[in-house]
Amino acid sequence: MIKCVCLIVEQNDQLLLVQARNRQKYYFPGGKIDKGESYIQALQREVKEELQLDLPKTSFHYIGTVVGPAYPQKDTLTELNCFKTTETIDWSKVEPAEEITDLKWVNKADEQLIAPAVLEWIAHRKLNEKEQEDQSVSFKFYEQDDWETVKNIAITDEDRNFTKTPIDNIKLAQEDPSRYPTLVFNSEDQCIGFFTLHTDGGVAPYTENPNAVFFRSFSIDNRYRGKGYGNIAMQCLSQFISDQMPKIDEIYLTVNDNNIGAQKLYERCYYQYVGEDELEGRPVYVMKQPIK
Image 1 (cartoon, rainbow, N blue to C red):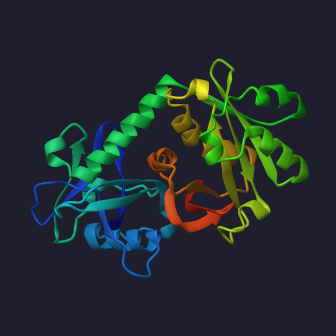
Image 2 (cartoon, rainbow, N blue to C red; image 1 turned 120 degrees about the vertical axis):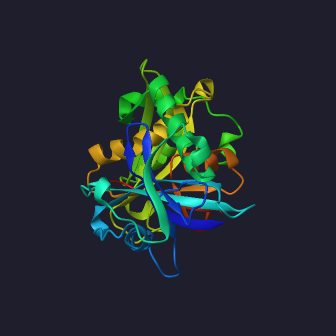
């Protein structure tokens, strides 16, 4: 897989895309990550090389990752780590470098002009927007009066292979103040899910960042699955954490290596793979997402 960074610039239904060396398809500005570079360093270099813009590293903000077919390479996947910039730029005055044969606004519907991985990004964006229109969720930290509500969350036997039950999490939180059990409600005020936010020792195995939080034991009530609630909850999570835990700037989570459904959910919600580990004796992938 080819790992890349790219700059996302949107204007209504258009994307600012580049054409390199007169190729047929247009792509996001950006490129491959060189050995030893961070994502931000790679993006800053690529933007300077392609668009002749010297943008400060602090202006780049991560918005997600998507995987799709590489272009022009065949039978290869590319991972696009996408960022936006907070800099105000008059794009009409940007003069691309020689290797960029065109820079223009491309309508998202002009699929014949757009590289496959960019189309994948557009499809993910549409899916997320549709689910957010159809459903909404809210979160609430657990309180003692919520005990009966938590007991009624329906968890399958298969779920127990991957995560502790909500009741197990409540009992652990009673002994550990760094655990924050959290309930998920839909727009009809029905409790449809649960997770725990774990600071301090909970996240310490995965990062040295003291301002990170570990997201764990996420489950959607079996009676409410197939309605997009899992995706919506993950999309809303960072805002909830920002509001309730303003010092937190990164979310970490683990997912079992055989839990393909959860892996795909987190990928769709732009979590990045950062390594492998073991949790309670089982192999897991470690993923993270920065909070802006």
